[in-house]
Image (cartoon, rainbow, N blue to C red):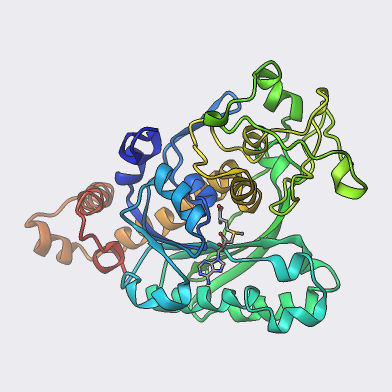
Length: 371
Ligand SMILES: C[S@@+](CC[C@H](N)C(=O)[O-])C[C@H]1O[C@@H](n2cnc3c(N)ncnc32)[C@H](O)[C@@H]1O
């Protein structure tokens, strides 16, 4: 296993311009999407200018996978409840897919007291502390169903923080280059009054066969996580079979070996195939045993879906920065650089300065650039 510094995404990560605090990071699906710089399904998802400066998860094994792929330096292991004091003073973006078990499985009564779901309030606390330019919160579709609705309305009201324009949308991952019919809600907040433009759907969908075909003849290989559960057919989800000509059904975190069957072969899909259906590149290593890996893959935000959202967040916050730079008083600029120049040159210089800070370990972008 190569050291994390040799991972292809690490160089991209180090070069980021906008600082990101990542909560409930799991194995790093959403974080990878924000970093970019990976191939999937015959396309390369370019590196994005985000730098994860602080990430956290309580699950030791998920942290091991995260560290092996995305680095250890910025990763804080343990409960968010105990780690609030280690947060940076500011950040450009806060992201988090808070735990969802209480919403997706149980009924109304557990929602109010569900200790895990109530963790979303920690995310709100973090946003209030680091005052990002944008935040992105992910959760399950169950929140829109009747049993979760009043809880969701409360949650949305809590996320309507002063100074932010907040919006939510139900995303179908298959519409964004992910070979899976996964539906998830994203709540996005952006500072100021300009609304966030959600990314446009692609208009084409990748099928299960297109995503997995080259693995059909591959033999089981633990190093590549190309291993599968031998659980026999069982009622309900245990007998589900993928269709070759459609995106896969949702890859779940808790299926106890009863993961979907292959569309053609007489076996269940492998962990590597499940990771592909979640749009993880093959370079992403899952360093744990089978059950933990299943959970990490099923819990993740598909990196390719996160990449599209990250791209839209980038456009939004860079627009805010350019706007601020355009409004920069020429006199202030002259005081700083000792000379005057036109607005475009000013923007270039500010952005170059931001890149300079990004390479500096002690960087606090929001302290330095346009509040
Ligand atoms: C839905 S998963 C997030 C997956 C992640 N966003 C990704 O894309 O890979 C929720 C995560 O919250 C973590 N979690 C649960 N309680 C926590 C706590 N008190 N503090 C920190 N993390 C917690 C779980 O271990 C789990 O990995």
